[in-house]
Image (cartoon, rainbow, N blue to C red; front, side, top):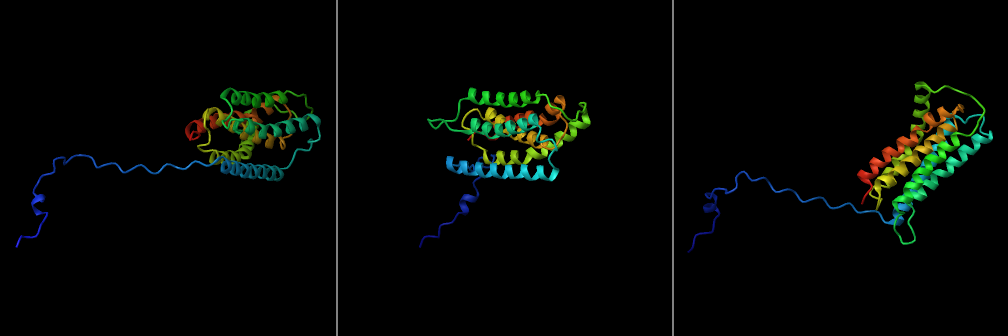
Length: 222
């Protein structure tokens, strides 16, 4: 009768690689990208929530009494229209299904800055205030509060959603969110001095573009 097999003889064999590193664990499964229809639905939902937030916060702060002033009304109307147009230029698919070319997206980004700065130059009668750290800090803070929820929603919905030029397209989305903040604070602040509106109200447009470019480059590509 043969003795039962045992592993004991192998226990005496020394480990040939006693200091070898442990094998690395397998990588986690790749995150599934959203389909075009799923991303469009989420983007529409985020846009609706953002618009609701902007209206509610503006109502809580109170609207400026000179909303009927023609230059003020024109500024707010054109800037408000530029918000969805900027998103359309940045995100719309072309006829072949691919996103717009980088030069088209860049032109849209330049147009956003030009529209904002150009309308600031409109002659407006009303309260004047010298440009100062105090006035810039106050209005820029309010504009940031307006713009922050739309920016967070955009970052969540558009993560890994830019096939090409992620930094550039992220800059457009960030500038659009910043412009929504500028519209919000401009609907409340009564100061019409061009330098104040350009810096204190428009700082979020520039900051949004810069932050959007960084986030787009880091998280935008699939």
